[in-house]
Length: 296
Image (cartoon, rainbow, N blue to C red; front, top):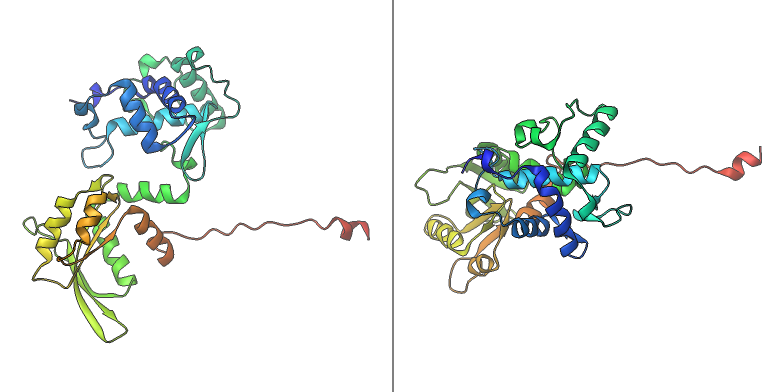
């Protein structure tokens, strides 16, 4: 299946609203996407089409993000700083009265007036693929909190850049002699290093870093442990995604060398703590002392 066969984003608008309603009026992106996929009966072969050949985001996810962006700009839905989507206070709940064509045209007019992007005003027949989506705007990005923005940026990184970020992260965390050693036949080992505790004990460590949105399975955890045995004291598995419950159990299984796991949330917190690509923003505010002025 090709990208041109994937449902266009304007066709996903009404299903997005119906999905949000079915989920009780609020949902995170993962819940909302899953419900839209269910309602639209999107087949697996369509879900497997990537937005970019060298990327990790599917074409369906990309167009769903644009659908949310248009619905938000139109004033129908909104998202909190924690990434939870809900209906806006001004939406009357009448989904059947809405037209994707009207939504698209209204948002395009608003964008032109604000100088955000220059677009031709046409019907939805003219926007049936992402080539008609303005590339200078990222869907939802401006509305995301810093954690979700960082997650988007991490997923955009090339595999080589993500490995370099891992090296920097480990060095800043106290590891020495860190290097990338990954080879095609190395069973998932991406690099190695040495961690010294209290200046006395040292442990040889190997690591694997996966830059993707999915969940690491127990079989991947077992394969990594198998590659570690006889080569290092510790194994560290880093991913921008998550670990299944079974994978976590496998990492600490009795009778087997324990593995340390860092999922996407923990990675983001560590980057924040180390100040790597994340800068604390201090906003100044002022109080007006009314009495001071009145006493003059």
